[in-house]
Amino acid sequence: MGVAYDRNNVFAKILRGEAPCTKVYEDEFAFAFENNRPAAPVHVLVVPKGEYVSAADFAASAPAELVVGFWRAVGRVASKLGLDGPGYRLVANHAADANQEVYHLHVHIIGGKKLASVSGPTTRPG
Image (cartoon, rainbow, N blue to C red; front, top):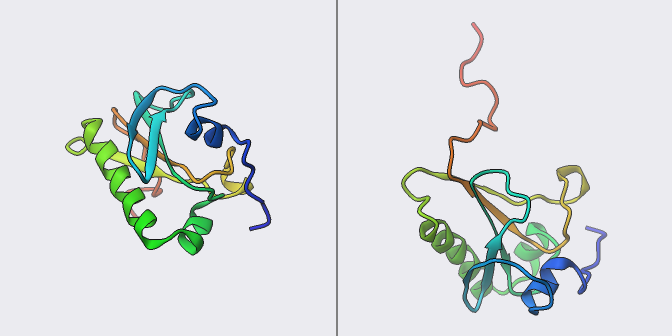
C-alpha cells in the first residue's frame, strides 16, 4: 500500500474523542458519525476501531471478530437510519485514484434519495 497509518488523522482523533462529530452509533467494533460534507440527505461514515489505512489493510490485518463486527455495525447503522426499505449505497475509497482523503478505513452509507447509477448505461446498444 505504501501509506503508513497516521495516528493523528481526523478519524483517529474522533475515535479518541479529540475531534468533534455528530455520533450516530457506537459499539465495541465500530463508530459511526455524520459526514460533515454530505453527498445526500443521509450520509454517515462508519470506521472500525483500530488502525487500518484501507479496506485492503483491514481485510489483510484485522482479526476475524473485528471484520465481522464491523460489517454487522455497518448494517445496523443503515437500518437505524431507516434505509433498509428505500435502499442505500456503501462506498469505501481506496488510495489516491479513488480520492481517499483520510487514510483510516471508512465506509460511507449514502441514501435518503434516489441515487444515480454507478453501473453505466442500463440498456445495451443494438
